[in-house]
Amino acid sequence: MRTIKRPGEHEIEIKRSRFRCALEVVRTEEEAREFIALQRRRHHEARHHCSAFVLGDDGRTQKSNDDGEPAGTAGTPMLEVLRRNDITNTVAVVIRYFGGVLLGAGGLVRAYGGAVSAALEEVGLVDRRPVRVVSTTVDHALAGRLDNDLRSAGYQVIGTDYAERARLRVLVAEDGVADFRTWLAEATGGTATAEVGDRTHVED
Image (cartoon, rainbow, N blue to C red; front, side, top):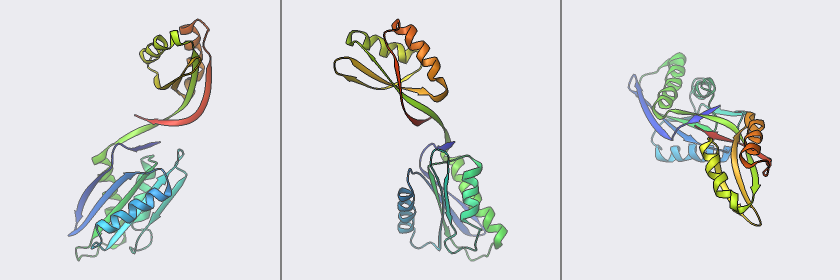
């Protein structure tokens, strides 16, 4: 899956109607609906505020709204653009300022889908990779060197806790846990073990 690199807006004009697409990164349906409401307030004079969003690590939650446009001519093509680009955790709102010329069903589908596509091209996309949070515990005297070795080997250290021993938390690609165990055993002479924790995602 992918998500947008940054929030942003982009506007296209078709037969005097302006279609402004606003994109935002969201994690929950509540956040998505809050963003849609925000765009309604900001552009209260616009005729339509159509929306689509996809949520979840697998993109399972998908919803759209035509907001008064003929059924299937706005929210559905917007959602299809998000799906076609394998995008998740993103909400798109297209604000239409009516220009006085009717576009017809086909014209609306192209306009709303095109507005989202143009906005996505403007903000860019990043890949989301599944990773595991892996913890390893070593003596304090070894912690600094292990931290350096981990970073040199390309692993991302996200935190270190110091108690009786030092506990380092590392992000490891989900399909690379076995290789990490081997690397860790070699780097520490077998004195450290790996405890595999939660699954999460990183974006790059």
